[in-house]
Length: 83
Image (tube, rainbow, N blue to C red; front, side):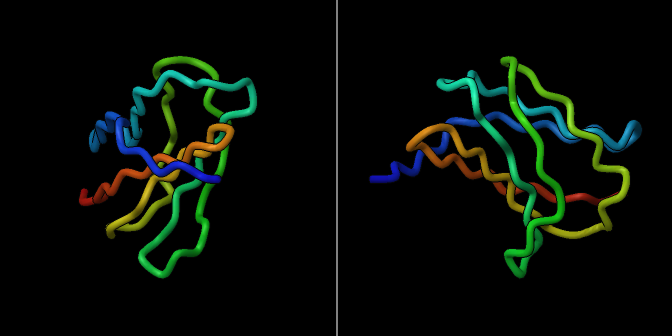
């Protein structure tokens, strides 16, 4: 069974084109996906520490969803890129 939770803190730094994610991983294989509004995965990577910096300089101005997949947990957070 997959549990959906929402306890992720996201901060977008527009001047440096970074997304800062505050999330404490519960497993050693925690990953993130950034999806566009159509659900297509744009970027993926791993989360190893409490704060993860993700380069989003290649993302266009739009709305996105950050998904964190951590064992049987799925966390989601919406964010917008506007420069």
